[in-house]
Length: 216
Length: 209
Image 1 (cartoon, each protein chain N blue to C red):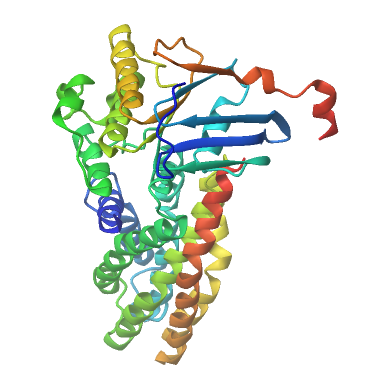
Image 2 (image 1 turned 180 degrees about the vertical axis):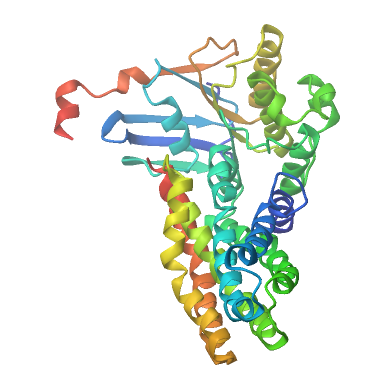
C-alpha cells in the first residue's frame, strides 16, 4: 500500500511528470540567471556573493510547491479514504515528505551546477554548496510539509505558508550559507542536525494537523 | 428484521447516544441505532441536519461530541469526494485504488455502472454523477461488509439511480450492511428509516451547550 502511495505521490509532484511541478527548478535557475544582470558581470562580486544567492533561491523555490502539497488531497478526500483503509496520517505524511523532497531536493542540487556556472562560483565553494543543499533541503521539505498541512484548511493558506516558511528556515540558511563565507564545512553538521530533527518531527506534526482539519 | 446469525464475526455498526457538533452548533443528540448484517438504514433529514457529520463520525473520521460508535468489520465510505486524481484518466485513477486495495474493480462492475467508455477521460471532465459512479466502483471492488453511503443518488440519472439501488440491495442481501444518508427516496426492500431531524436539540437545550 505504501509503495503504491509513494508512486502516486511522486507522479503528482515530480518535475517533468506533468502538472507544472518543474516550476521550482525553473525558478531557481531564473534567479541565478537574473542576479548577474542586476549586480553586473564583475567576477569577484559574483563569486563572493553567488553562494548566498543560490541558498536564497533554494529557499524561495521550496515555497512554490506548498500550495498543492496537502490542501488538494484534503479537498479530494484522499486522506479520508486512506484512513478508512487503516493507514495512519503519520505514515501518509512520511510518504508525502519523501515524495516532496525527492521532487525538489535532487533536481535543485542538479540545477546548482548551471547556477554555479552563471554565478562564477569556484570549485571549493561549489563543493560546500552542494553538501549544504544536500543536508539542508530535507529540512526545508519538512518545514514546508508541516506548514502546508497546518494551513491547508485556511482560505489564504497558500500565501500564508510562503510567509511562514521564511523565518523557520533561517537557521538552515544561516549555517548553510555561513559555511560558504568561512570556507569551512563544520557548520554543515548543524544544517544536517537541524534537518534531521525537522524530518523526524514533520510526519507527526503534519499528521496531527490534517487530523485536526477534519474536526471543524 | 429477521434474525441473522449472531456469531461474533458478523459485521455490525452501532451508535449509542451519539451527539455531534459542527462549529458551536449541536446538530443532533441522543441518537442510537444498530445496523446488523443484512440490514440497511436510511438516514433522512433536511439539509443541515447533520447527515454528512453523522456519516463521518460513523466512519471514525471524526470524534463525536458525546456517545460512541461501535463496529465490527471493515468499512467503506462513499461521499461527495471520491478521492480520484483530477488530472489522471479515470482508468488510472481507479487503478491506484486497485493497487492500494490489492484488487481491481471487476469488468462487470464497471459495465453495470456504465464506466467502460469513460476510462480514458480525465476525472476533471467527468460530471458529478459519473464521479459518483466511479467512487461506487472503487467501493464495490473492495468487498467490505459495511457501506456508508453519503447521498449516493445525488447527481445520478434515472437509469443510474435504479442500478445503484439494485447494487445496494444486492450488497445487503449478500450479508453486508449499509447506512445510507439521502434526502431522496430509496426503493430498497426491508429498508429502515431514521429521521435525523427528530434528534435535533430543542432550542432551549441548544442554548445550554
